[in-house]
Image 1 (spheres, rainbow, N blue to C red):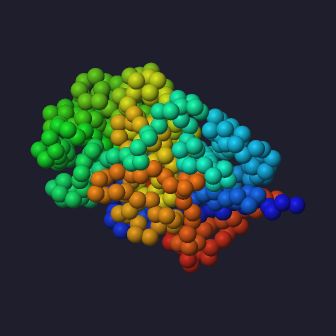
Image 2: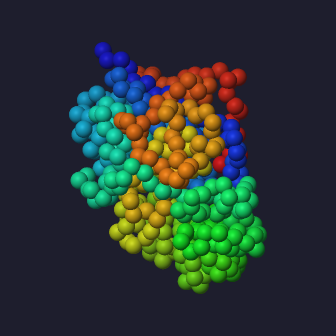
Length: 407
């Protein structure tokens, strides 16, 4: 009899060395779920980062949905299918369709990234082979260089002058809007005064403007030198977004409004935006995220490869792999895990070259990471093939109390 497959869930709430503040939420700890899958002597790790204001999911919701994980079906497919063929199916169909997964985008991402990592390590494949290529399986449009420039993000916890003095060099700037448009105009003006016209500047409003405010805000930011505004209105306010796009004179990028391909189709039908912010967890895993990039390209939208604030492991390298697969992205967010977490739960720790503000291609097989000893206190539950129940792992005393207020 083969060794039974196992699934182990970690709920990771790492305190952040520096916080992150934007109009939708403040964050001082991570809130990620990490899944370790072991099948037939093979292992892989995946991650999701649920944000209720984005997809309606919380970590508690995803953990509950994971109880229905078809572990036996997944284990049988890994054991009984040629791994290269299984990987090809996974890249073509996605984990949600291939295994009829319950739940929403974050659960699908959690399982898919773990399976891709497992198969990549088993087949000794680099991360780039675990994300669909832009032009199909034989596409050659991926970046051939070893590094990509990344955005610098000015959140509300940092003064613009300190940001400009300490966070360069600048390739693309995203600034989080405040609740004071005059402050935001001053911020964009200061960035333009220092950087000139060479660097795009995006203002992310995180759904904080009303339709009555939005046209005036957008025109003021355009005059100050902004290049884009991101998610200015309530999620899915298609008609209002279309009017703002026509009257505000500033291109609109959508993030929270575009979680699925159906959302993207709605944005297209209404003429509601010019670009999408694509994030691996928000959009349901690397396969769905790659499809959304393809949709954007096909229909003339720009797109950004973004991150969830405070990713802790495989999401970081999966997102970077997606970026290397899509060199025509407007910009790439490298994340700030190096600033947020002096000690991470994975090794090697994903890095950003702060001298150049670039990220390197993922090294190694799979998504290039392994859980280290710091992960153990965050283990929450474990399931073994043949036993449908999830059993608690870590004593409650070793874990930080969960809070659904984290975003």
